[in-house]
Image (cartoon, rainbow, N blue to C red; front, side):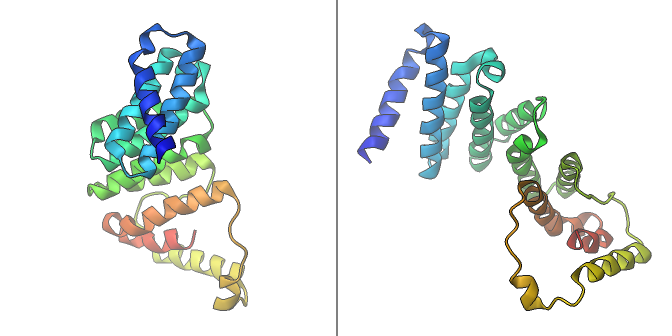
Amino acid sequence: EELEASLFEVVGLLNCAASNITDEERDELAEMNLKAGVKASENAAFDTAKVYFKAGREALGSRGWEGDYSTMLDLCSDGANACFLTGDFDSMNELIDEVLSKDIDTKEKYRVSDIKVNSLHNIGKFNESVNAALDFNRQLGLPAPRKKPASKFTIIREYIRVKKLLKDKTAEDIANLPELDNELYEMGQRMNEYLATCIYRVEPTMLPLIIFQ
C-alpha cells in the first residue's frame, strides 16, 4: 500500500513539472502514468485512472504514436475502458476512433473494438453493436455472416457442416477438448459472444449461424 501511495504521489508531482522536461523524460513519465492508471483501475478508481491515462497521453504529445506507440496504444486502450466504466462516452469514443484510425495490426485494435461493441450493446444500440462485431471479425479474417435474414436452407446447411465436424463426439468429448490457445480465434469468439446476446434483437434468423461459428 505504501508503494502504491508513493507511486501516485511521485507521478502527481512529476505531472506538475511536465512542461519543463526532455522528450526522453516525457517517455518515462508516460510509462509511469500508465502504471499509475493501471494500478488505479485495479483498485476500481476509474475516475482517477482516467486522469493518469490522459496525463500519459499528454506527456507523449503529438509524437506519441511515432515515438512510443506501444505505450500510447495502452494509454488509449486503458483510457477508453476507464471512460466507458465511468460513463464518459464522448471521451471513450474519441480514444476508440483514434486507435481504430491507426495503421496497426488488427489484433492490436481488439481492446478498443471490444469496448466499442460492449458499450453499444449496453446502451441498447444493438444494430450498431452487431455491425461493429461482424466488421471486426472480418478484419481478423474470420468467417462472419452477412447481416441479412437467413433462409432455412442456409441454417440447415450450416447445421450439417457442424455436425460433420463433430462426427461422433459426445458432450463429454467436447468438454474435454484442449482450451483454445489461438489469440486470433479467442478474439473472434469473444465477438461471437456479444453477437449471440444481441443478434436476436436485430435479425433473429441469424442466431443459429452465429452459434454454428
